[in-house]
Image 1 (tube, rainbow, N blue to C red):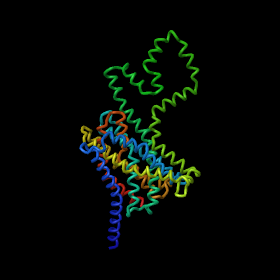
Image 2 (tube, rainbow, N blue to C red; image 1 turned 120 degrees about the horizontal axis):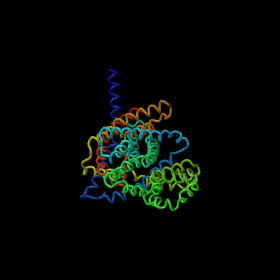
Image 3 (cartoon, rainbow, N blue to C red; image 1 turned 45 degrees about the vertical axis):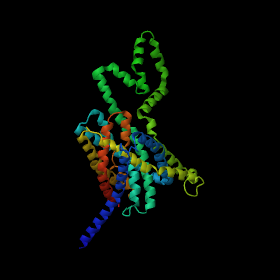
Image 4 (cartoon, rainbow, N blue to C red; image 1 turned 180 degrees about the vertical axis):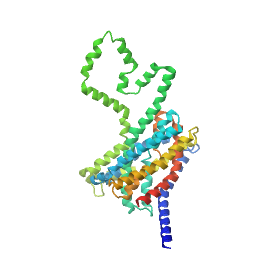
Length: 425
């Protein structure tokens, strides 16, 4: 009898955790559905132009304000020591996801211009909009195992804000260049087969890199034409370049490849400002807290940041609508991405986080462990769609992938969040 009572209590607790994990996902679903509804042609409130302008405001104003306000309030030297594992955890998720994307490419054999998209979708999760909705909502539920709702909400937003900033860096440094190389390989192959090597070289010179510009056809022909007439031009200037010039040259090449403007995105800059204010005592005392002389600055930034979550969710819903109007995407490729992101990657994440806890690399904070686990179970980053728009290829396929992944996330996130809460509780 006692074992039956224990079993019933266990089931009731599991059901309570499932409700606590499902309510935030349902909220996301409702806001996403509203965004899709507003984007319909006969309503046209969130038209493509409206989404573009709204996304720009969120990208440059609301998201940085949300990250800055949450980091400035809770970041201290003690919390930095506590959070050091998070960048490594996100890096591991990107590495494992990339390997899974490579396996999906091997098994499903998608078109060449979509292989980078597969790797990017498997590697980069939505570390911004989804956790920043789910974590505060989970903290407010009665069945949550994370203690006081206000402390949970404050620290949870800190963890998620740091996760968003780190994810933005990894996304633009790694995924952006994976997509760029995958897509740019197609025109080069076409140029070799149909036009020839000579027409391929001007396209390379147009990429903007200093090294590529120096090896463009114009410079090459000019060097050949005048090699006999001016033999000293090449050999006299070469020793004068020196070590400093070569370092500058390589730095310019690296800067062009990494796209530093995208690397230091507004969300990253917001994280830097939040760290500065939180870690420098005079700034913290003057801005943070109700008794601070300049607390009106903090209140203003918080007010701006509060608009980020609903607007982000509406934009996600409006963008997913494009997936309903697209066709021709390889089904096995989409299925492979879903299996990689929602089955294999979270399972690996459990092993990584539990191993880190066992080795005392992560402190016994249930909320922190929950956020670390959640980073492995998220749908693909929506910014991947933005990148595909920048490149002008694979947009319809990306929309289908995002639609399928986010529909499946409604079930998978509820189940994984329930299991994660049980695991750390």
